[in-house]
Length: 319
Length: 260
Image: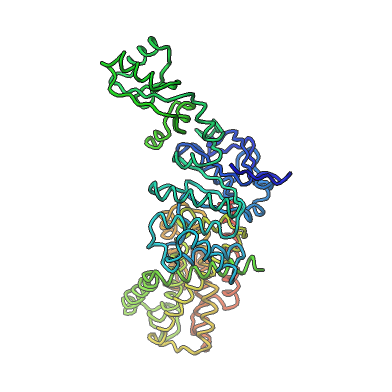
């Protein structure tokens, strides 16, 4: 982790007791966290968990109902104009114009920030080259694949040299290969331009590659740490037992082994040390009622389940 | 200055590029008024003499300035309706988080739409000789200047609506309930002479009445009285100018409310 601290200079993002209300419903409640300069920070959570609301507030598109928010020391409430100069934003929905070419999109965006002439052209071309788009600059964005369009979005957002890059679900709709490449670009930008990155995601691999991850569920920040530390909280391995009658089996497992399995998505889950031995013992003891047993090292999803009792993806299906 | 001029220019230029790359839009804004003009103008000309109009003016000629207003209105609607989607899921998202003021965004957008409306209006103006209106260079410039002002007001009215609404369906409803009646009651279609009093008042309070009147005056500049009994030129220009200022302020206000 390469967190750069500039003496007493304020952190990139500082949020204290932030809340937001839509009508009667609270989408965010008492969210508090800090993002250091140079950090890649992820907000992980199911859709509807409050990520996009928080993103919009940080992007100066919406005012929080209560609480404090500062970006590089400037208040989100009263100094939005000053904040916008330091902000690069990649939205969940495309913000590139499909009718314009790749270069036109990036240069139009640069004009909005006062960039022009050879400085603009040079910066645009070098970014497009870095993202492997140099042979497509004269093509209209509507002819590009989803992965390439995302790279245009990134080139556009980073062009005016923002100090903080905000990304809302940047890799939605990308295949795993394109997703890994995209995260790789973020890492490069952090190294070469010293940009701080804050992204929202519901994709585990993306969150795994962040320096720190905040888990946002039903509007509250339920955990915040490095991915490793979060996973260490689960304790040992995660054993998942599939059975025709999970409730019956749960009682039997509890009685015999003293564990209290949770039922998530119709399967039993046990968090314990030496999961492979426990898995074997369960198989031997209840071979009649168990249909399958899997075990593995905890992922961030296991962290989410252990905190909330629900899977990350369930909420999406419910939606 | 650079913080204002450059963003305005780039937003304006984007409208031009988009328009050139969507050919159907050119036809869309011209075809319907043309069909209206030919069918209604042709159909009414046999039975309907505009009351109060100078002798010898047929319906197709009476209707002509109104059709120019319609071309402008349609282009204004088409160019602003896109803002609804653009704001939520398009290029405008990035514009909204850029360090530029809301009036700058509205100015860029409205100058873009105004230019397009003006171009289409002037294209239609080339048909004037067909109805017996002689078009001098001076008339062309005068009509152009008035059309610019009318277009700027209508585009900004479209922007007020587009920034307030979250769906294009809502825009269509407003178009049918407000924008088209506004055009019907502007003196474009029939003169205020002899209509029921309540209708006469509706026409008198309609800002577009003065836009259409200003267009008529500028077409018949050399033959005063040729435009018929309509509001005087100075009043028409002042109301049209006021309408443009008010709608621009309204659009800026609507844009500021959607995002701080």
